Length: 167
Image 1: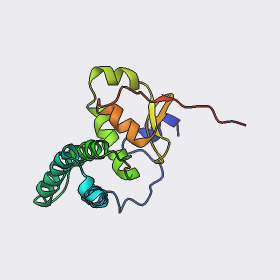
Image 2: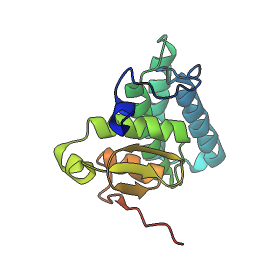
Image 3: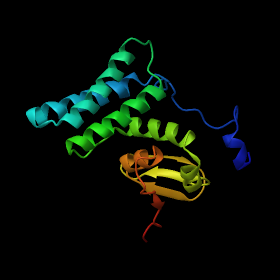
Image 4: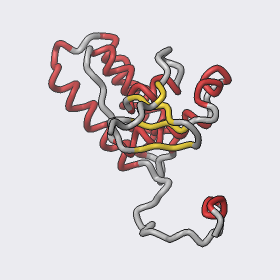
């Protein structure tokens, strides 16, 4: 079979176990909410007004999601952006689970404004610390959080071309 045929729908490419595949992003959202709550608890009274405001936005998204049967990638994206704002305002180094950062980066890349699309167009994006990659073409890489922040338009630091492997 030709190489291009493997990427077509209904191709004869090998099938893998797809039982865990779901469009429901509730597990990722629940993990994110738990992480934010633990970080806020660890800060205690040191949690500033600005960080509290972003945490309230995140908790409101969690309450909205709790009323829904499934959590969409759109809701997860909004929650991740609120979490990143909370973490930055609290002076914390934000961390995201690989599945969470990958899902959100994919959503943000698909709806990115023209200047960001101009940077990422014709490239694959790779999170060097999360084990995911998507797209085609020469690889641009950065940390998962850096990629999400760039794709969301919250950072001007673009991903860099991947370094060739050293022999």
